[in-house]
Length: 118
Image (cartoon, rainbow, N blue to C red; front, side):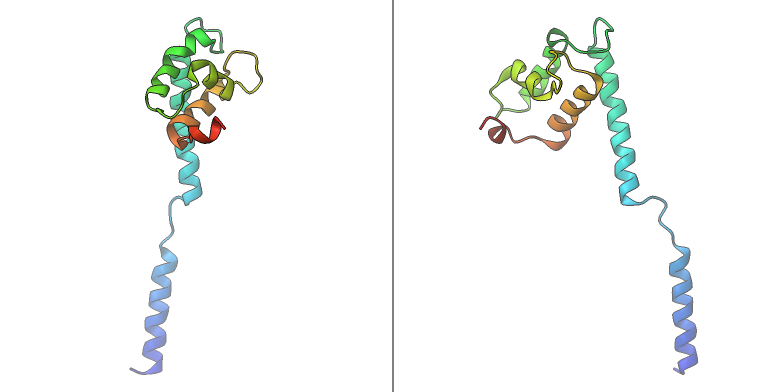
């Protein structure tokens, strides 16, 4: 091949590569998934919020937390301990954000309960 053929082939390759643009970055995809998960958790929140008060009392959230505890055999603290872990302002109810944190932590991230109880 002549040098001009190589340059021509190289420029064709570059032009093809520059035309291929990703539609979403990895970060944008993660962000979109997080938004969708938050919407799901908020739907659960409003389903569990029996009195429509905008917060979840221990009585309202206990059945849901019991479901979580079934999938977390290493956690021995029970519903009260789970509430304390996620009730950041210690007012004995879970807000939307605290509930979303509970769901993300327990279902998505998978907490190591042995480390928490130390």
